Image: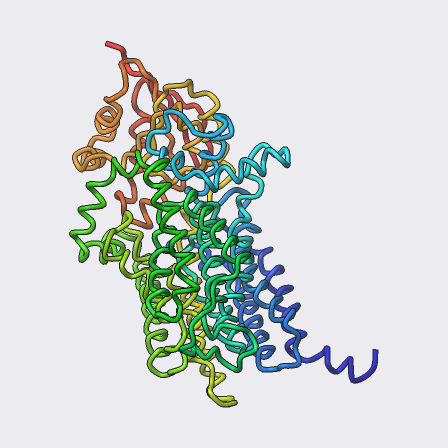
Length: 580
């Protein structure tokens, strides 16, 4: 190697990426998961982890300013960021993270046993009516010979986020050929995606397809052809007719979205409708919009009709209560743990900052007003007024608006001229946004993490519980408790009536009796108590923090409760009421 070549490879952009990854991996060796409390992983990740994050950020922005650094190195930095954020729990935890991921494993297993639609699904019947994600995974398991998705589901967050890099890059290159702007927007996106809808779930799958559809449609918009200057001009010339192959790909992706998730098709229709408002866009957008509307209506009036018919009154009520829909996700914080109150305000601050910076970009950067980006960012808002989506709509609107908002934020932060001061300020803002993401993404890990003891206790319960036995838990934060949901009725005490929840604090055994009174006389029920439920009660305040402990003490002292399994993190009890 020549001296000139050696000098090239010892520059900071080439050194900081491997150094940051090495420091990150070494830092994970000293993490004590038992030390998590109010702030989850934030409390137990060592200083080396945060040093690695800063090194990676510095290296990326140095590489972005040096046009001699190949694009593959920028890709490496972005994948390194994805790994540091999203692969860290997968590397640290010996079990699958997050209770909803476990529920989706249970749904997939039930569909495999039933060769499709699951009978007697109860509250899980919504998955029978939007089964696309699960059937695709079932096909993969059948082809590969794997018995369960449990082995790879833990890696869904890093994989989904890594796969998003491709469609996001395609989308951003539709609006600019400025390398710094495009790749900077990718970094900003990953720094602000705190909502956490990237686990093993239909939403993660549908969101990936949603962004891909937007990217393919955006490539057909006027002024979106690559090589057209520093920025896409958004010129008023009319778009040509959509090319056949991209249109077929869009229709196929839309079909996959429609059969997999109930909300994402509506978000897609909102965004495509917004893109079709300018007349010059319509020849490119209307075929995709017509396909999305037709497929959604066809599916919702056939396969999904039972669910929609049952929930139509709730949907109509939501349309008449836009004010309550907007604030439904901003739950009261009085009962939450002190650390979670701080986290809630950080999350709100991060989201507000992203939206404010995006609005400022539209004002301060006139060229972005000639693109479709402002329409893409604002399009999900009508759904926030239409329905609360169980209190989650405000977070889903942020999720679907973020791809456009991240680009707008970067357009605002990117210096219009080469200036070291402005570049440093931009990096400081990005680091602040990244810090906010860690609060939102890592702060609930004390309840998202399950120990092997919790998993083994629940597995033992499912193994011995006969069909028809009722399974009772305080909250739903139990790994694998939904297994065989088609043969085990479930009782979740925090979802019972207010009277039962109040009685749970004064007379736990009487509350248990009332909650299980629906079962035929003599039906056994199994009560599962675990560390994760106690953590959820403490962190969220859904029930008093000592609920799990008090209930455990009560059943330990009561007759007819037999211990099925017990360890340091979980206990399972069996109770058979007197048939008389």
